[in-house]
Image (cartoon, rainbow, N blue to C red):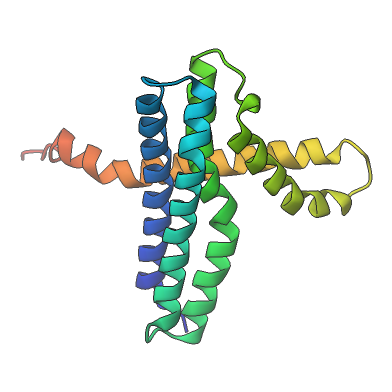
Amino acid sequence: MFDIAHLKHRVSQYAALWVGGFLIAGAAILIAMTMTDLMPAADLVLPVMLSLVALALGAGVVATLLSRRTLGTKLLVLILAVLFVLPLLWAPVAAAVAIAFFADRAIEYSQAYAAFQIGVSEVLYPLSELFPGGAMFGVVWAAFQLFASVVGVISAIARAWPFIRRALGPEPVAEG
């Protein structure tokens, strides 16, 4: 049996972690850019943010595993964490990529970005080997970026929607 309320709570926390990782990394990089260039700023911020995101994800999983939840709930939380680990780690990197895009700079010169890309490549390359064709890794990398970005956008919308609804006020009531 699954504890659906707990699973929804964990998914909500994953969404908050994605949004928080993106916003905090972006803000930290922008602040660091007041003192240095984009690449050193990204190299300073990204390892810290990647560590914090991974630590937060791990803490949530460990908290569930140590809880009195059912075995099915624990396994599903673990599966969700494995499924979302790369998109969650992509959040701070996506912030650096977005800043580089708007600054018209190549983020590929950042050592932290390059290390992240190499690390993800080591995970995704075996998946690309399952399919014939040499250009498949590029497709898998692009699919990862798209998947991680879509997860992030959905997370942001899911987290922001209740606040937007409250800000817009209650629905008008038809009289009569």
